[in-house]
Image 1 (cartoon, protein in one colour):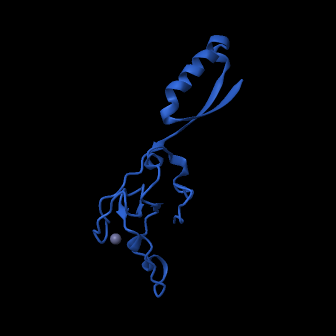
Image 2 (tube, rainbow, N blue to C red):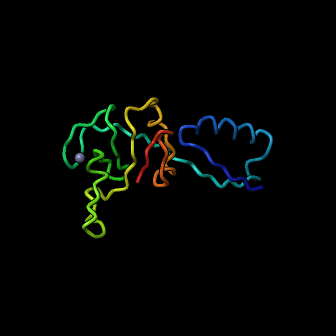
Length: 131
Ligand SMILES: [Zn+2]
């Protein structure tokens, strides 16, 4: 028997309880697991823009790069000089996530599946768009 498993990192314990119940009935050796654990990522609220140093808070819309862990103000992140070509057009060339602060439910930023990052993560239904 082969089983595909998918679990979130922070559900691991509950998941193991279920596994124990399964193994109480089915011998461990008879089951082959293909296991995928989804990492959980937290997105922090920035305190200042990496480029222009403008102050950011949980009251100001902002962008965050989960790869460089830098915060950017919308002016820098959305900067697009159409007279330039390629990456020279932009001030920010990191992949960034738009955080539409102030958030109605800030806990949305604390429990995000890693795999969603990079796939145009939706943080909120009133999100205006991400890069
Ligand atoms: Zn800035």
